Image (cartoon, rainbow, N blue to C red; front, side):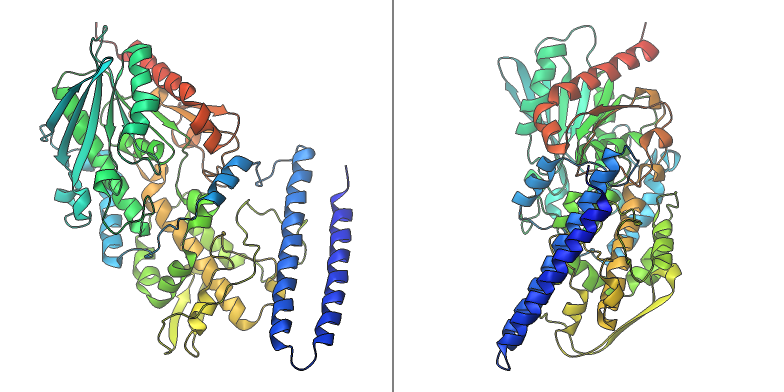
Length: 534
């Protein structure tokens, strides 16, 4: 095994040789070669970034080969490749309206407490069946109801999402019981055909268990007209979706109970698994839960996972800098304060060094660094100076931004618009403007973690009535849902079971559906053993 330090020295030597060659070429350009000088400078920065990326990868490989514990966990190459093939951007409109965020955070305090929200959805909440279809192996019922969120938080849902739609797949002949499992949709799972084909119909064939498929807000028939595919326009849209699904799940569970179905449970894959977890925290009775390919918070998904490359950081940074309400008012509403919280992130920002001279002594989470050179674009931003006092909360920094038209975008531009956007490797030789941009990048990343944890962290919600009925199915090399640096579900829900599958997020979704279904059957069997009606 080649020693890491020797690799580092040899590559740095290669880099120095390349730089000398570039300097010679630049010298030969002469007085008329300004554009070529710029091109060579960009190429030099790119080559430096490539070397630094290789060094990080070698460091991670060295740690893994020595059996050392590292936050640079192995991730699935298929997950990374699949994400690169998708060109869509998330949160292209930014954070969302500040007033909506304030309302959502205040409402989170209610739905995060099972006792406070138990009366938000009446037991007789109206649910309607619109159509029944007979098939050879099952019966499919299509229905709808008005989302309870529209009554509890009027106007926050887009008009297209107010009517909740579902599909109920039931066997033609029941066995001893009439079990039903509610399936919530994962990212990109529009309408019902995917869950119906991969989960619901096989479950009827294997065990005679019925499935109720609820369509997510912002998806399928509930997708806003100006939304492109599954790309949520605002960060706040994800929180609205979560609040709506919590209440809509309660409405469906009440309806199923009234109709005599039992036992009842919930599941979902990826985002659907996380939403199902949030929904179960509010149900006042023991209930089986099987979240697949999800974990304790969505903050890591959008800050260190491969999906962070799809986030429109440029727009988020711009809005965070231009509107002080995000820091001065919204940050104060963030209550979650666990060991992996936003406040811990603030301490990191406050205490982080201005530069990192070496990589060997730095343990950096995978995906946390941006390794491409900055992209400069001119934007339609007023040329007037913008100032924001005390950026970064506890850090107590002042970010001053002023200059000619277009300078704001240059300062706010992420190191790469398609990569996680913190670059601390080259901080040593940064200009003042570059340091200000880096400071803003850190703060916007910390703010993203803060708002995500506030509304999605499982620890910010009540513990389910019986955690022993929960079976979590996770992929060992999941690049979409990083587990490094966040609290584990076993810590938050003592007594729950976690099953790990080999491979990553995409391969598990494509090839491990049978194991997901088996986990559902096992959770229901546990429920029947503990709470069976004699």
